[in-house]
Structures are given as structure tokens and as C-alpha cells.
Image 1 (tube, rainbow, N blue to C red):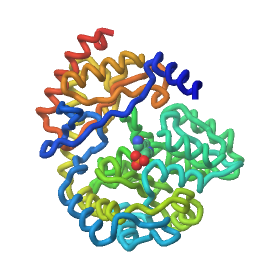
Image 2 (image 1 turned 90 degrees about the horizontal axis):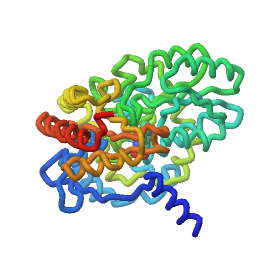
Image 3 (image 1 turned 45 degrees about the vertical axis):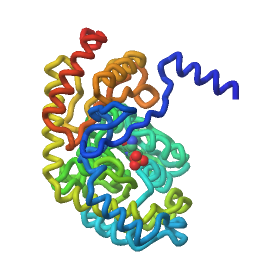
Image 4 (image 1 turned 180 degrees about the vertical axis):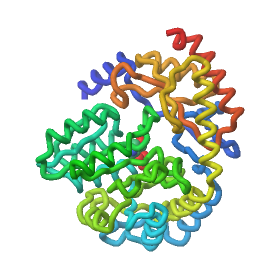
Length: 392
Ligand code: PMP
């Protein structure tokens, strides 16, 4: 194990070591977290709609637990396909206005399973350079060729599609909202390109599901582009506040995934209580439009305050607001100084983001109030001045 110690030391030396920190919710105080004895404003979770502690979801999960037991006992193709799955998948298809949906254990497994089921040796997956790691890992698992195009560079994608025009099958995959930058994919252009080149288009709505659309269906629906997208993926662990994921599309697609997606076939089904929690969260996501409105207002307010303070916060109106500081050590210092000042905001470093673009990733929630954010922006500005981040 000596080599591991050496490698860990190298990570330390480059300010790239990662360690687990314990955070707990603060009873009765949404949008905050407890770290040790300290209460911090939570600008680091993906609980975009403030549902993670919602009592109605907790009650539904509790009911599911008492009526269906704590575990599902087997994979869905064995005996784990409990009644709540069917009901939930019907409700999800109705919400997504799709022929069918399939629930996965989480977004990571959904991306792995879909890509590995839709592409194999001799096929090409075209993937934005800033796509999430689960997409990159899915491409690896599929053994297809990985054609990475520069972030949102449609000309580059077109050149790659042209180069591989004779490939057996072509899959284009993108995040709808990029997880570390908070900007949006150029979905209309992607739909046009996939049609032109006869490719399948898959969109990961992990950070846009629940956040965009009249009923929180996601960015594709908000832009009226849903029918141009063949495979919609979303997670229940962010805006839904629970856990799990879905894939939505045609009946044929879902039948294929049941037959071929390894995470569905070879892993135990979700506990029934989790399915009950997702079903309740789905009701709230659809009906509580005020949460989306509040989140959008928070995003506008927070971005505008940071811009006025002199930060470059990147484009878009998503709840993900990155402040790029460049080097890893500065990002870590910035994050620790914010924590000392009562704000939890994570430093994101390579390999999660490209070298030289270490950043603080602020993420907002409908649980935050305008006062929370105004106060946070003031404190962030003070810390940045003290560390010389803003002077650069
Ligand atoms: N896709 C994207 C774009 C993500 O950001 C994440 C989570 N960080 C996932 C997929 C994985 O989702 P989950 O947390 O449900 O596994």
C-alpha cells in the first residue's frame, strides 16, 4: 500500500486531496446546515426546490416503510419490482408527456446504463467536454468511440459527426445545465444536428429537472424541444430532494433498457419507501410553481449582487453560480474562509473541472430568502477582498 500513501501525498501537495465532511440539516431552519457545532448558510447542496426535508415526503416514505418493508429484496427482474414502481412510472410518463419511463437507482447508474445499452463497439458517442463524469464513465463502459466536442461548440460537433458519418450508430449526449458551470446546452442546435446526421440525442436534466418547465419537466420541455430529444434522463436526488433517477422516452427505448441496461438488471431495486417519497415529491414538483419562481428570483438576485461586487459569475439563470478563481489552493482557502464566515460553499478542483479553473460553486435553493442571499453576497465580497481574489 506504500504507493497509495505516496500518491495521496502528491494529492496533498497539489491541494487536490479530498476528504469527507459531515453536514446535518438544522431542524426548522431550511437552507442552513450544521457542521460540528456551527450553523452555516448552505450554498452547496443541490436541494434546489427546498424539498429535502419536506414533511409530506417524510410521511409518504414512512408510510411506504411501514406497509412495504425496508428493502425490496432483489433486482427488478427477479422479485424487486414492487407495486409502487408501476404507479410511479406511469405518473412520471404522464409528467414527461412521454410513452414510458424507467426508474433507476440514481442518476449515475442511469447514465451508465443508458449509454452502455445504446452504444457499443463500432459506435460513436459525441459528448460535450464538460459533461458529467457519469456520462464519461458510461461511454467507457459502452466501449464505443468517445468523440468529445468542445463545450457548446456546435461547429466542432458538426465536424466530428461528419468525420464519423459512416459509424454504425451515433449517440449525442449532453447535460441540459452543466453541473459545474451552470450554463445551458444549445438544445435547439443539438436537435437539428441529430436530425441531420441521424443520431440519437440524450439529454441529462440532472440540474434542470424540477427547475425549468411549467410543471418542472425540465429544460427541454421549457424550450418546447421535448419531442426532438430521444432520451431524457433526470435525477430525484437534486430538485426532488429524495434519491433515484428516471429515463424517459419511447416504449421501445424503455423495453430495450429493461433488457440491456446493466444497472437495472444486476442491482437491487430501490427500497419501496424511496419510491413512495419520489411519488410525493413528484406531486410537489408539479404543483409548487412558487418554488421555481423563488429559485429563479434568487438566481437573478445573487448573480446580480456578485456581478456588482466585481465577480464574473458566468452566463445563465440556473441555480448553479460558479466563481472561478483558477488555482486549487486559492479555491480551498476561499472555501475555508467562507466557512469561517458562516457560509458553506464547496471548492471544486480538477479533475472535476479542467486544470486551472478551480472554483467556488455556489448553489441556490428555494429555501433561501432574499436576506440570506444579500447577507451572503456581502460576506463573500469581504472574504474575496481579504484573500485578494477580487483584486486579480
Ligand atoms: N448527471 C449530472 C449532470 C450530475 O450532476 C449528477 C450528480 N452530481 C448526476 C448525473 C448523478 O446523479 P445522482 O446524484 O442521482 O447519482
